[in-house]
Amino acid sequence: MAGKRSSDEEIVGMRPDIVILEAIPQNLDTARRLQEKLNIPVVLLSQDMTRYRESFTFLGDILGRKQQAALLSGFVTKYLDPIRKRAGAIPGKDRVRVYYAENPDGLGTNPSGSIHTQILDFAGAVNVANVPNISGEGMSQVSMEQLLIWQPRVILVWTPGADRLTTYNAIVNSPLWNRLDAVMNKRVYQIPWLPFSWFDRPPGSNRIIGTIWLANLLYPHIFNYDMVKVTQEYFLKFYHYRLPARDAARLLSPVPPATHAL
Image 1 (cartoon, rainbow, N blue to C red):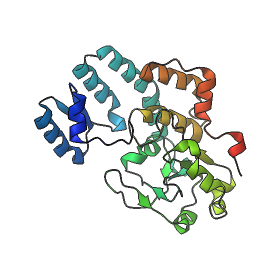
Image 2: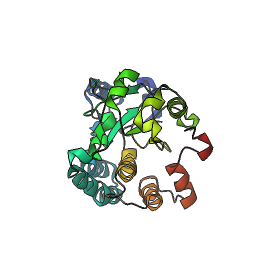
Image 3: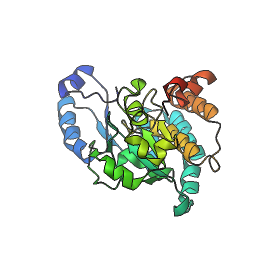
């Protein structure tokens, strides 16, 4: 489960044939420890968005699922490669300034260069958060004064238990937040979150559909996708589930119309 932490004993009790961990420095010792305890392969896998094809190929080899790996790599080639190329060509003056709002009050974030905001860089956005990049899962606290200086054009919202729209409502219903251009212009967007956040936490393959969604949101004149059809295609290839069009539309619009308080 996303966000769940398991002890070594719990992992041993699962009797896995292989353990796959994210390739981050803090997992090196964990990998060595688990491999000694379990006496099975413990491998580290990169979550870097620029290396998805390599990761899928590697997984296909070690799991004996080369055909499925090729299918997933093909999806990346079809969508992410063109987005990265075309987004990279967007002039600086035309790039959308974005703030990624985390924590229940929206005053937590991650800067450009963080794995947690890699989608912003990938899709050609400008991450307005001028804060230190805290390694691992950390996020930086910011103030409303900083946000008023940054004046993002778009605010993207994430929060645990996103179905309650805690962070979204805290932003759109606050007189303080209404001093921001993005809020006044009704450009606050709850990030789709099913079955996992499409943006981050966890920073996995869910970010693939999230990148397409974000590119279409920020630059619809450049990335004019039929997002319902793309979402259906993603769910079929990655989750082996035929998602009905009406359900795809609901996932893409996580804030019910009655919830908008602007």
